[in-house]
Length: 319
Image (cartoon, rainbow, N blue to C red; front, side, top):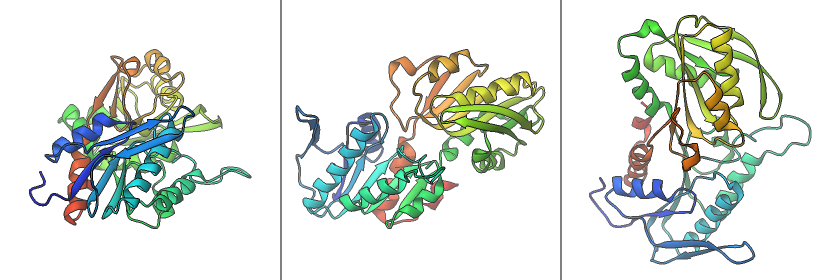
C-alpha cells in the first residue's frame, strides 16, 4: 500500500483492463480516467480525462492479440501523457509482443523486438516494466531502464506446495534447449533434478521431438516454459515424456498463455494433467478448460510499481 503522495496514476489500455484494476486495488488506488477507442476507419483515438502534469504515470497494456492494435494504443497513450507534461511514464507491459523476433534467424529477417523498443522510446516512455521476456537480451535493445520480472518467482512457490517433501517423485523438464536456463532456476528453487527435451524445429510453430536427456521414468514431471502459443512444442514434449520417457504424470507451467490456433484442442488431446498459467494475457471463456488454471500476477506488479514510485530496490521481487 502506498502511504504517501498523490502523484501516482495508473492508466489502462484495452488489452487487459481487469489486470490494471487489480494492480490499482493492490496499491489502494483506482484506475485513472481515460478512453481508448477507434474512429470508423480504424485509427486509434485516446482521451486522457484528468490531469497528469508532474505525475508518475504507469500505463498497463499487454501487447497481446490483436498485437498491432494494442501496441499502437500503448504508443499513442504514452505520447498523450508526454504531451500532457507527465513527470515520468512507465510502460507496464505484462506480455511483450514481438519478443520472439529478437535476432536474425535467417537472411533478410527483421529484428522486430528492437523496433518495438525504439518505438516505445520515441513515443516518450521513461521506463518499461515487463515479465519474462522471451529473450532477456531484449533489455539491451532499450536505452531506458527495463525491469524484467520473473514468472518463476510466482510459479515455483506454488509448485513447492504441490511437491511438499516428495522430492524423489518429481522432475523438472525443459521442453527445449532454449528454456534450459529458466527450468534450471526452477530446479534451484525446488531442489529437483532437471531433464531436457532435445527437439528439432522444422518450421515456425512446428516441432519434432528427438530425444530426452535425463531420467523421467515413473516420475511426475513439470514442464517449464515462458509461453504457450500453439502448444505444439509443449504437447509433443508431453507425448515424448509419456511414450518414450515413461513419465507417470505430466504437469506444465508457463508465464504467458498466448494459446493461439489449435492450442486448446492440442492441450485437451495431450497427456498433460494440468497447465498453470499466469494472467499476463486475458483468458477468454473458450480457453478456460479444466486442464488450465490461471494464477494472478497483480500483486507482483503492484509491488514493482511501488518500488519504482518510491525509488527503492526492485531486486527483492526476483528472490
